[in-house]
Image 1 (cartoon, rainbow, N blue to C red):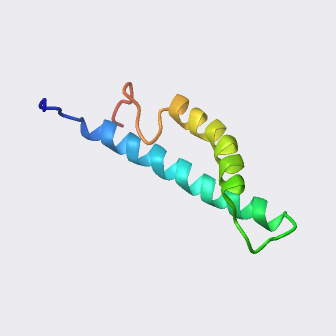
Image 2: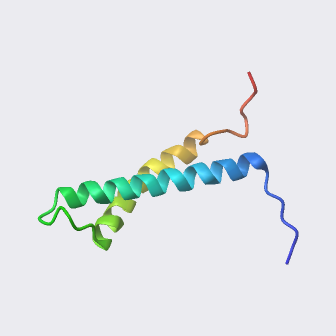
Length: 75
């Protein structure tokens, strides 16, 4: 196994993106279920559809740089 070092800012960005995506998928699936004929039942289909929608937000967050940017300068 090779020795891999991950920069702190890279790890923070990954954590942020994972959390953002997971939160948006979960909230989206619940919203889709609430709008369905069985609002008390969240299905895999709801999660799949919510994930497809959340991908757009994730792409925007990655493009924006997340919680920090490589070119970010301290104030």
